[in-house]
Image (cartoon, rainbow, N blue to C red):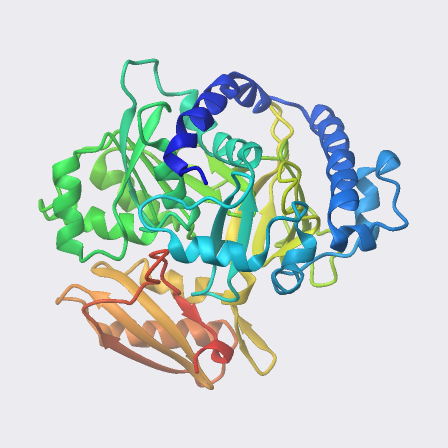
Length: 454
């Protein structure tokens, strides 16, 4: 079986060969996008019906050749749990199985491990819910990462060597961030990423970044915020010209602090292993999503479309470029708020409020994480925190400077929960020197609902 390194230059060449078209798609108007979606949906449905036993049964009475975008509403959605239960039957390449995918993930070290047929596999979740496993062929990998880098590629001037970028996120390439770093090695793309695992001790992370001196800094916003504090204290001495956050909700106060300390604007990125990608303009909370590669439905609990300006309960994703593991109306528990259309393009514009499973439910009272975030981000010296729901309130572990008045923060949180509708909230705070992150992804589960806290 071939190694990933033997395929990398070919994947990079295909990405660069198609980059001009990908950049041009950013200006597509709504009618062009819908026509493209309709054609791609029919191809996806035909392939899935013919080669996937799961979709062969689901599409038994569907004629892919006449399928319209509005017909999707008549097709049942699929959850991550159902996808994992039906994994072998859902795949369109019959050589592939969940067992082989899991074996490849387990054998992965510093580079991705290939599956039969030169396919790739990544995993997501686990720390925040049920784990998901996703298989790609070369076409799907090229399309996914092209959608991620095309915004930056159009702004990076042509030069002999790629921009040096540090990625403070996952350490293992079973996750999309580290997979992307592995894909960028060798200088064939405009940016070359060096992974800096978010699970490293902070002093080691700072030392590695100081030695690397990256021109661009990418990472989880919680880690970028902590690195901004290190830079403010003169322990971190890098001067990136480009900063991008990903994988977590970027708060306005975080954005302002990171941008001010490093003297560079912050771009926000939403990148899901399932294939959905969104990128913001510098210092803009609104993300523009890859509607040319995905059909994106913002819906309520009953899968009914929500109006512009109304938070969705979830997102139904149809990935138009992954024919190996078809995802058609795949449920993602993200809360999107659609914004008005832009005159210069027809792609979905939305603000991401976080995940629906972050909501804390108390006997008919739902408390949004913003009630807590609003206190924490306005408290100088609070670097990070984890909130665990209790029957009558929250327990909060706080990573903070020594001069932070935790009693004051506690009283502010009590008041914030009371305003949110929780009667007589009980809040406990304790200082901590570290917060445990997922060993593979480097992500922090910041809000732990009562049902997950045991």
